[in-house]
Image 1 (tube, rainbow, N blue to C red):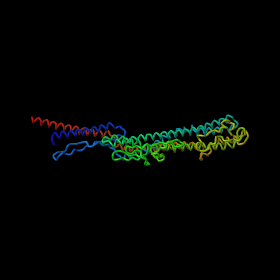
Image 2: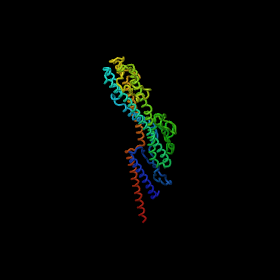
Image 3: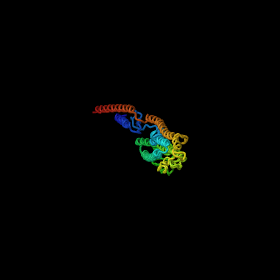
Image 4: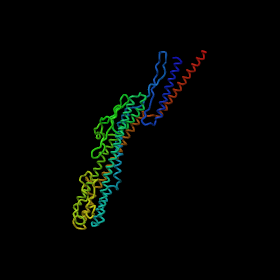
Length: 454
């Protein structure tokens, strides 16, 4: 190879080493960029032009992203389970707050209600004691109604978040379809940052809704739900729809016009649906059972007694038609609310008797709510909510550890290490300096040769 040819070879080498420094600098610049995968430059030797040449130096072959699709897929599989538990624990926080503090909620109202009957048994002819019974009964009915309303509000708030998740899912599928189109029409080296965005979008989408992800050879992805409903195919997005369920008005998730709500088994959206459609209705049912049992038992016993005028007692509470809705509809009967003398305290039609009032007071210890006392039934409901929240938080922590370990493994491959980049920077820098020195030597040699010809 001629000296002039060696200059060209060295110039290419300088460009290659400079390019390597550019890649290192870009990596370091993006060390804190979410989703960024480390870039590496592939260098290749330029083959000699003839057998008398040692070679033609080096050239840049490509720039690659260091990414392990296996770790990405494992992350896409585990995130939905972690996010599902996160959604449950978060959404149930509203229900847990709605129950109030121990000793300051329905348990306190029940105790005050039965205490009022105990005071009436001490003074069955007292107008004040009778008014106190009515007041505490109205307070209890109001607390049941408010509790039912708060649980309903928690369900509606969760439904609003379901709708928000669907909107976000549709935004992500649209983004992925656009990225697919751009990646498919871009050179491989130019599509690296688009693929980083793609992975981040798929990661978020998988956390919201369990997905099946297929990576194609051209860098694009196909995404579908666990049940096989398409979300993204090529440059086309298939958005989810929302319809209002009859009766409740809650959001039903549809795909292609088909209701898939029940088929959503994991992901943040699945957790919200479970809270809205299963857990909170379960708490409401237990609350209704408690209200219905208290109203029915009090009414049954009250109807056997006599009021202050010797008239047979009727229903104390407005009789609930069904268990469902008993808490929301619990009310003191209009007759008793308007005239406390109608409270039946006596077992016989004679003034001064207190047997019914005493029996009504003793209902606090009666096991008529599915084999439990009213206080124990309420405590069981509070415990159930707390246990569900605790279980979700524990499962979230467990799943979160798995996700964290997968992300650490993924980062060991695709993450930017400052120490590694510093080492690479030194290699490219030294190589650049060596090639620059060699370039100087060739240039000086040429100058010497040219001076000899003068």
